[in-house]
Image 1 (tube, rainbow, N blue to C red):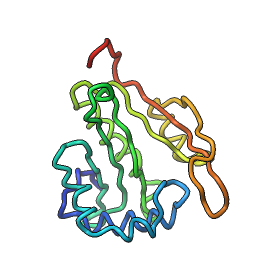
Image 2: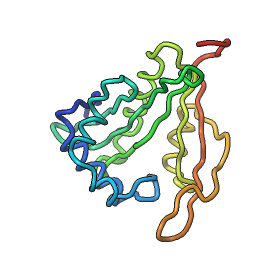
Image 3: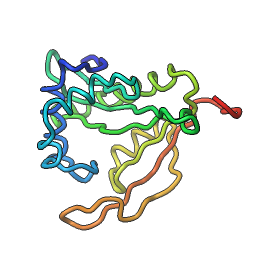
Length: 174
C-alpha cells in the first residue's frame, strides 16, 4: 500500500470510492450519496485538480485499487490562512486494520506542515465514532467542542465533535 496525492486522472476511482463511503458510512459525512452522485464528472475532476492549490486529496493505493482517501483544505483568507481542515477520511472495509488511515493522516499532516504559515489542523468527527476519534487522539488531536444536531440522518440528529492539532506556536501573523 502506498499513499499519493490524487490527480484529475484519478477522478473515476475517487468518485466510486467516495460514493461507496457516503453509502457505507453515511453518518460520517455532511453530503449524501444521492447529492454527490448527481454531481457531474467535472465536479470530481475540479476537486482533484484544484488550480488554486487550496486542497490536496490523498489516496491510499493497494496496487491500482484506491482503498482510502482524505482531503486537506487550506484557506485563502488572510485571517484564516494559518488553519488547515481535514475532510473526507474513508478507508474501504477490505483495507481496515492495515494502517491505511494512519498513513493517510500522516500524509495530510505532512502537507499541512509543509505549507508556509499553517499552525493548526482541524477536523470534525461524528460523535460516537470511537475508531476515528481514537486515531485522531493518537496523533495529538484534542476536542474543543461538540456541535449538537450537526447532521440530520434517517435515525435522527447526530452531533459532530470538533478537534484540533497545533502544529507550531503561532506568533501573530503566520
